[in-house]
Amino acid sequence: MTLGLSILDQSTIASGRGADAAIRETLALARLADRWGYGRYWLAEHHNSDSHAGSAPEMLVAAIAATTARIRIGTAGVMLPHYSALKVAEQFKVAEAIAPGRIDLGVGRAPGSDGRTAFALNPNAREAADNFPNQVMDLLGWLGDGLPEGHPFRAVAANPQVPGRPQVWMLGSSDYGAQVAAYFGLPYCFAHFISDRASEQVTALYREGFRPHPGHAGRLAAPHCALGVFALTAETEAEAWRLYKSRELWRLYRDTGRFPPLPSVAEAEAYPFTEAERAHLAPLRAKALVGAPEQVRAKLEALAAAHGVQEVAVLTPCHDPATRQASYRLLAEAFGLRQAPLPLAAE
Image (tube, rainbow, N blue to C red; front, top):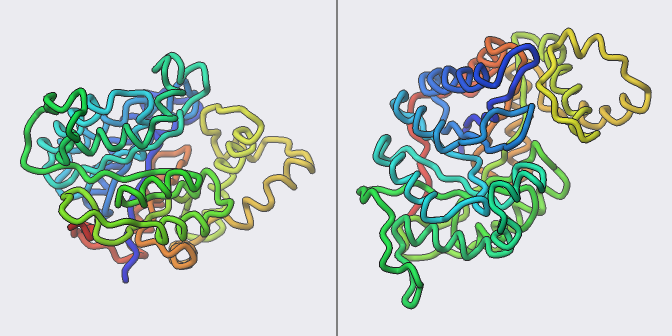
């Protein structure tokens, strides 16, 4: 089976440029990804961050849907406890009207922010997170499954009424999301770029616990799993590793509780790493999916095979937008992508 290749974009803010530039870079890359044959273009959600500008992925989904022709567009994801399930359903039904058959609605339970920001978004976010499976059930109901008898909002319709429905995905970086996805018969994406601890066990747990839901249009007949991964390529292996220094320094910042804009390669090369910092980064460098295009393709295919997944969504933050575009173009060429949609085994 051919490995599906998609893009995950956090609208990363680069040092020396503003968040508005990051949003425009996202829109430009999405149009190129549509041309290059990528299967999906997913937008992340982060709040109160100096690192990422994508605080409203549903708006980016609509903008990209209106300016592309064939690629699927979606979220990775909407952090559902911040919001009303009805409002999310309506937003993505609008997106479905803009680009019928091309919308993915990835949802997650994590805050995508610090605790204070989560409270500002929804003072009841903690209770909503505890009620996450019921929120998912309501979301699926408003997207077309219908709400159960006795539900207090059964008579409330999610508008607009459109012929199709977005494909709902479950996202996660622990076994919780895998279990929810399996229970509802939804596709699942594991955020390997956040944490790869026990990742193979998590994807196995999803497959083993998967429950098909015959008769439900938005569910799957069989498990379908993806990995969200960081990967970077360039014309040569040496150049790819040089570019990686930018991400490497940012990871050091992140692991010590700091979330600044992405530093440039020159800033990373000038940084005075201590021996302890180099030791901390060494395991990450050893596992990094970095190299020449064919090397990165081989690493991605091996990682996907080890996890039993059908797709990878590649995250490639680079300080220079042209460098990021080149990495994705080279990866598309290495995989021999063609302009064809990426189907799911939906019933």
